[in-house]
Amino acid sequence: MAAKIYDVKAHRAALLANPTYVARPDFVRGLGWKEEPTGGHSLYLVAENSDTPDQHGYLTQVGWVLPNKYFCGRGGSWSERYGKAFTTAKYGFLLGRPNEYPLLGADWDASLLTASAIQKDIAPDGNCKYWVVDENGAKAMKMGMKCFEKKGGDTACKPAFVVAFISLSNKRPSAGNHLAAIAGTHDVCLLPLYDIDETLVPEALIEKKLRGALVEVTYKLMHYTINTDGEITESFSAEIQQIIIKAYGKTQPSGPFRRAARPLVFKPISAVVPPPTAGCSNANDGNSAQQNPGANSGKSVEGNGGKADDGASASNRKRLGEELVNPIAKKS
Image 1 (cartoon, rainbow, N blue to C red):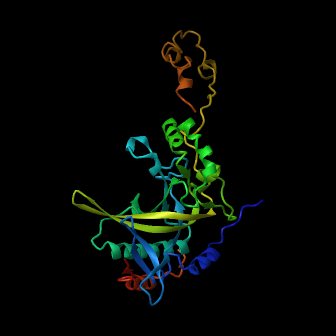
Image 2 (image 1 turned 135 degrees about the horizontal axis):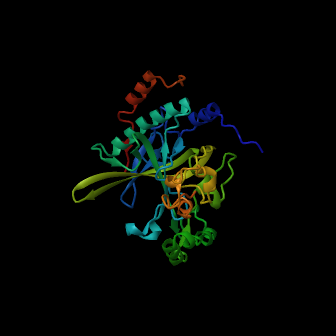
Image 3 (image 1 turned 90 degrees about the vertical axis):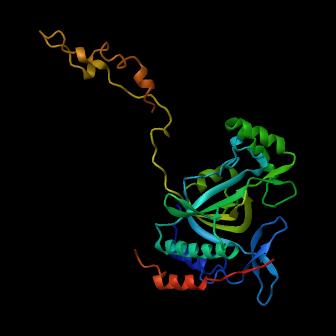
């Protein structure tokens, strides 16, 4: 079956009709911060003429999944060297600007203005981290989701897949051992990833299909104020609710360290070294095995393994920035 062609104009029209799309000029209307029992704040929708939070304020963003800091395989970003419990493991990736699509690129820029306003509303003194981040000289958005949930928790968790995760013991023995230890108390959470045809991607293909893809991500936003020895950090967490692939990532060229090791074919010495010329007994001294002992020793084989305008004018963006000066009322 032929691959589905990505229609950026149709997709953007659908996004602009979606009230959760961060790039909409009116996105922040009706949003407020609600204090959670855990001590942090979450972004909520507030009904008109009411101060009561109604439901979570979801955010939708479109971008490329960047190759750096990509942790979407089994066990997420967990590493024993960090000294954290295995139950705290998280999936994570960075979302980058879709430069190839001017319409979406302009929306990305507008969404950064919105994100800045949202952060400043709850953290006016700055030092905001872990949502909008710098990556290779450009802005990216950090997305994450927990790998495990206590049994009886979130419905997105799939207990049946605990068995599949035991295969960690083959590649990461320490992680496999930790997983076996929590199998009785925790379920495995799968990234809710949907393919281009909007069918759920099987667990075994998630890491491969998501890498480098153009995606539409819907997430919740949490905020925590962390005081470390008097230094205040305003921490934001984008918690993934759904990912839809809109276009697959480009195949990365295979480098010498990515290729599977394979024997290289060498011509015999006699094929590249001329025979001695009559009267010149030392004609090939410089090419002999004694002069170049690696030439036919086998060591050489082992050592060589293998600007169109998109409708988001400067004036529009200026007006958007002006509208977002004081867009959100804190709720507690």
